[in-house]
Each structure stands twice: as structure tokens, then as C-alpha cells.
Image (cartoon, rainbow, N blue to C red):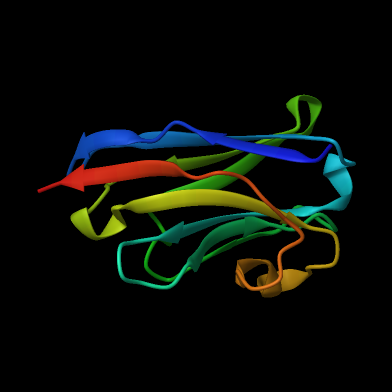
Length: 126
């Protein structure tokens, strides 16, 4: 059974940091692109960051570039999202997702990802 478990969300003040984790199981981790997505109330789900399976390249949405860092620990089948300098507009439910056939920046596209985990809520207070 494929499972993606996101954790690490919480309440933080603006300027603070959080690290999200996405633990994966049930599929060959190394073969999949893994992405972080978020959805704020009343807004569409958007890609935040992703890591390509083919060469480990990382990609970021412009709104988080320079503040967020994605990384993976293949031995633990876990992808992390380090979020620094958080802003109130980063408030959202964050999801991780995996796809076998995403390459390059396409791993930032939410529509059609193969597997999704349940989200974790990040709230940034001003």
C-alpha cells in the first residue's frame, strides 16, 4: 500500500522556521519525483517545491525561492521541506505527493500527481 505521511506543521510567528517531513512507503522511493504543495483557504493547490527522481534536481516556486529548501534522505524514504523566514501568506495546508513520470519543473504541477498524502497545517501569525 502506497503511503505518504506529511508531518511537522504547526503555528509559528512570522520570520520563524518549520521543517516538514514526508515519509513514503509502498513504492520505490528513488524512482519517483516528490513534491510539496500547499492550499490556502479559497485558493487552488499550488506547487511549492519538488525534487526530481532522475537527477535529484530541486525546483521551487518563485514565492518561496531563497526561503525554503527541499531535501531527501533516500535511506529513510523521507523528503523534507525546511521553511525559513515564514510569512503569513505561507499559511496553508501542506501536502506531499509523488509521481513516477514527472521530470524537470513539471514536478511542481499539482494536477495528476500519482500519489498524495494527507496534509499538515502550517499557520504563520503576523
